[in-house]
Image 1 (cartoon, rainbow, N blue to C red):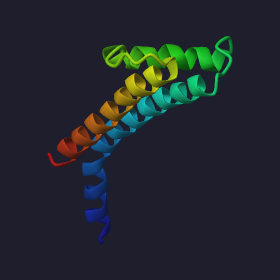
Image 2 (tube, rainbow, N blue to C red):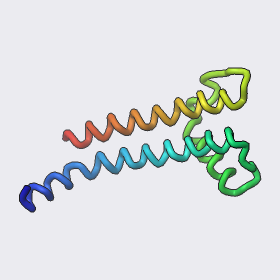
Image 3 (cartoon, rainbow, N blue to C red):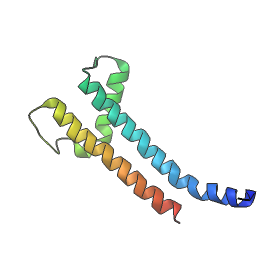
Length: 100
């Protein structure tokens, strides 16, 4: 691959990859919250508290989507759905932007 072709390849892919990276970071924040809840992490800790606030904000549309009796299952289902949603939308947008 020539230098010019390589530059066109990377230039074309960068915007879509940035979108997907943002979706992955959001999903990591949400998944970290799920893990903190399942491991009964100290909610008074600044990291756990901040992550919980951010995860709740990112998963706003998905809160109480499922309402099982178990609190842990509720967190896994609702926040897990949000994480999958962000990854799926990020992947779709990456493909659309990179195909432009």
